[in-house]
Length: 137
Image (cartoon, rainbow, N blue to C red; front, side):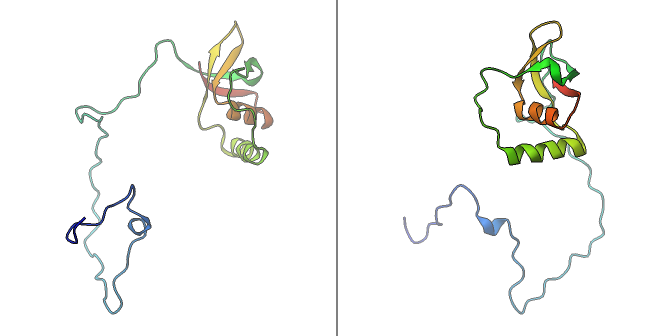
């Protein structure tokens, strides 16, 4: 590496890029005095940039409020330990604002379901004494 080359940058820009630097001592920064004008909103585009991004629909999937007691945990759940403190925080959050993200289940019988994703949310909903839970079936 020669003396003229820029130093090699790592993965991120570092903490300095997150914290704005003020003017040097003795310098006064001139406040920006232009009137605030609303900017037109930009549409979200896909990676190709040709069309707005749309959620992918899965054939046969639907949203439903399912009784918590009709859901059974997945026997193949890799997580076996659920931290009590984190679970208590989630229970409190569910009591205060509700469940923000639905669980994902599959039908196993006429009125029974098995969890695919969201066991912590399901357990916390039971502890929060919720009778139903939002789910994607």
